[in-house]
Image (cartoon, rainbow, N blue to C red; front, side, top):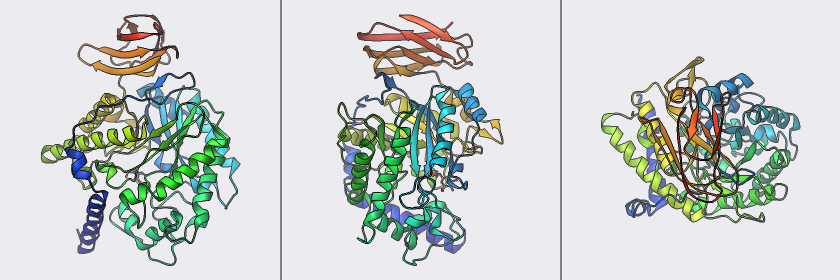
Amino acid sequence: MPEFDQMKRARWIAGAVVALVVAGGGVAAAAREAPQPARRYVTDDAGRALILHGFNTASSAKSTPDGLPELTEADVEREYQDMGTNFVRFLLQWRAVEPSPGTYDTKYLDKVAERIGWYRKRGYHVMLDMHQDLWGNGITPSKVAGNGAPQWATFMDGLPVATKLPTWEMYYLEPGVIRAFDHFWNTTGEHPELMDRYAKAWKAVADRFKDDPAVIGYDLMNEPWGGSVQAAAFETGPLATLYRRSIAEIRSVDPDSWIFLEPQAVGVNWGLPSALPAFDDPRSGPARIAFAPHLYPLPLDLGDDYTAGSKEWVDRTLGWWRDNILRTAERMKAPIVLGEFGLDMTRPGATDLVERILDVTDETAMGRAYWSRDDGPWGPYDKGKAGPLVEAYARPYPRAVGGVPLRVVYDEKAVKLTITFDANETGATEVYLPGKSFPNGGKASMGEATWDAAKRVLTVKTKTSGRLDLVITPR
Ligand code: 9MR
């Protein structure tokens, strides 16, 4: 590695360490007793608990001129047939939503709606994600990095941004990028209108999609970065302000959709604690605010694999991540959806790590969306060919449960799925059963079961009260 790269890398790591120290209490938090999963769930219109499994769709939306992912209806169909997913974290770009201040592009939103329709037909729940990395593509003249924010919202005061860095994350430390964020968060006191515009853009999106039954909710900002304000000062300060304003704007038109909140990405993605506070939901009825963190273990970010010596480190960071995420969710009284995790599936140990993360999220009742659905070595398909992720991701699971799930265990050897739940009157339980282990569908240990072979879904009507152990085995 040339000397320059080494220096940049060292700077990035140094920044990370600062974030760690500023986060404060991180080590103490990790040493406390392990928290237990609270088992809160995102619910559907009927009130059933949803277990959300899916993909981020797609990274390609960042750089296409129209801000839409490279995706066809056949791609959605293939994903459903191969893996039985019921969830998508669908990327939006603020630059496409609001091409000039206060003007919303209804044609773009119509095209988003068309794609949501492809998911709706197949019973998916769509979470709209206002994506950004590195603020926006206006940070360099050649648009070599960054996506999300429109050019009109990009103020860098002439500060420099390098045009070639070894990894994309390093651009976060460029002076111009830090300034663009400082203006957005109004740390500079010079652009109070920007946060307002952002919150109102969310109102426009919510107004467009509030009645779409497939849209489960809104992920307010991808991987927030505080610029020169970091960690707790950022999460309890400007980030919380943005969230409160956006929640108020969304709720002024849409009382029912879920609102998904992300912590600061740096540090928290690696397992450090978040300081994100609890938020009030002004809707009448129970709050519909969920916590949507990401998971990228640091050893992998630094180029290691899930093998030998670094496996132990990754497992350790997974433990911290689990505990710290559960603590934050408890403070927020919010269900958890892991909005992103992913890695190069061609690397040694990659499938093992995916299996491990699926286990952790299953045990803690978190939903999950893999990064990402794009074709390539990280994705389920590479040059159109199914890779190891497809098989790993196609696990049997209850997509929706008529009650509150306490435990979901799949015994792979015995081919037996046990769903323990406190039944209520919200409706039938729907279980996805992959073709490999359940070639002829499944049968249920109780209730009235119907098998839909085309969808590979077993619908089970059970008693509507009491604690039940519903066991599904092959037919
Ligand atoms: O995988 C994405 C990579 O191809 C892009 O260059 C990069 C910058 O836009 O973003 C990567 O995706 C990231 C996502 O946007 C945010 N979370 C981490 C993802 C993986 O690095």
